[in-house]
Amino acid sequence: MVWVLAVSRVITQLDRWYYIVAFAFGFASGNYLGSYLEEKIAMGYCFAYVVPSQKRTKLADILRKKGFGVTVVKGEGLRGTEFVYNTVLRRRDTHQFLKTLEANDKKAFYTIMDVHVLHGGYMRGVAKRKI
Image 1 (cartoon, helix red, strand yellow):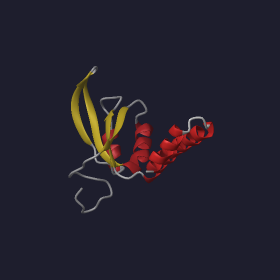
Image 2 (cartoon, one colour):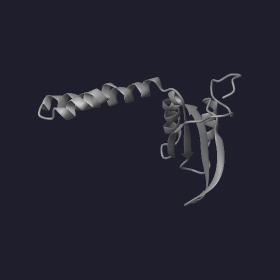
Image 3 (cartoon, helix red, strand yellow):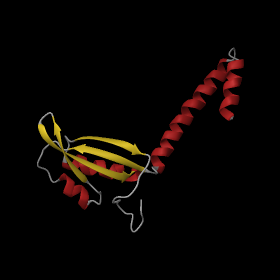
Image 4 (cartoon, one colour):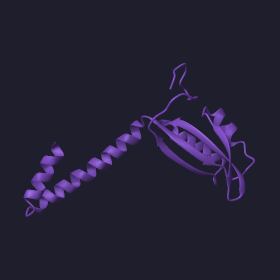
């Protein structure tokens, strides 16, 4: 509702440049603040897809020792057989996950995506609670 009122005021009075500047500043600062708060609160889960840089690696074991559930999947890539590590983790644990990944395999390929629906499986730090 506030947004509709602000836009209507800006559009009906385009001759007042300070309305446009104030609207643009409010819009930009709202987006920045919202993104910052979302990152700090970090609720929910994400999915990490990792392809290690070398075929023979202990990365899966290292991640498991850190408490992350890792599923190793065999696949075919440009260089032949590749192993893909999949894990679902809490968004607030993403920094620790990436720190562990960077410390043990700087050249690993990885991507992280948001998870919208989650059911079953092993989750770090979730004791006797079904996900």
